[in-house]
Image (cartoon, rainbow, N blue to C red):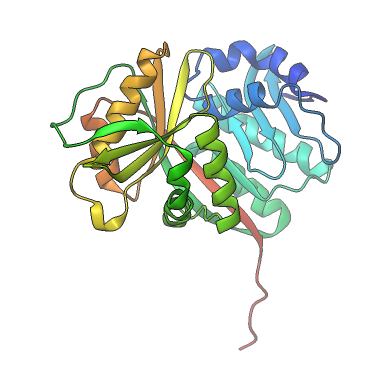
Length: 290
């Protein structure tokens, strides 16, 4: 197997376009980054863009957009697993620093095994996820309220909701980051609210509009309002809205540690595709003398 490095996202995308589009639901993160950052000029640290190829076929694609996690994607699990040691060997030789990896679970775990061994590091699972895809909505039980786009008036509470939501999934944003994130999502029309009797009770966001598919994220209902079906209604209505915009499918990720969310999304038509994992790497702590 041969590792090939690419100097720009357009050069990388030219190589992996068919590989990504043939599995667009699984490739959402990598495809989204390829589209979003296609024309970006990198003034400091450039992205890591690579493939592992055997007999002219892509076994594994790798993308790291600083400061985010290394993304890995394979088409066939066994091929990806077999390609990982070649990628790790290349990265070690290039003295490349990897702090986190986000990928389909089997490949991610093998990468973590080789990476921690090569660098005498420890690993910590940040997120254990399942990817779901929906092509048509199964309407949930009728719930009071309606879906609407978030407005600038909602910025009074949205940053706090985002801080709380990201804290629950170990991806905590600071208040300043949440304020900027909410403001941007409201301005681009991506953030939606489920409103009951004039009160905002749940939120969800459109994200990563790709070629045929689009994703839903940032699903959150405050703790005191849970158990009323608001999240189901919000996600179902937003998914239906996005399909009517012309997308062929919607995707979303769930935390496998949260059986409630996994159940409600399946009830409205989301079908499991594959499991993902995000792992962080840390230096091993020195052993305390006895």
